[in-house]
Length: 80
Image 1: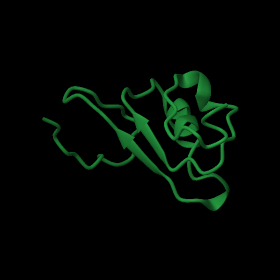
Image 2: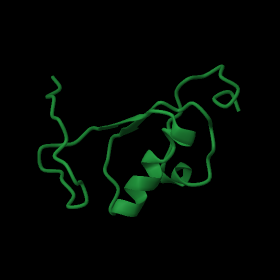
Image 3: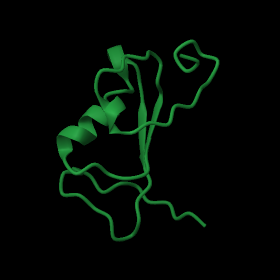
């Protein structure tokens, strides 16, 4: 409720929120773990960029983590 009314700007959730949530103005999705399939990945990212708005999706991956459904190689930046 506090996220929806704007008093909190960060929502941490599981894949349960990848479908059915319609919260306007979500600008960023941060994946700390890739889903197992492309459909789940698309639904997670679908929480942002609603109604022709712009949105950005970030992936936090380990060096050995990859999925064949990623169409492009993500831009990499190493974290300390």
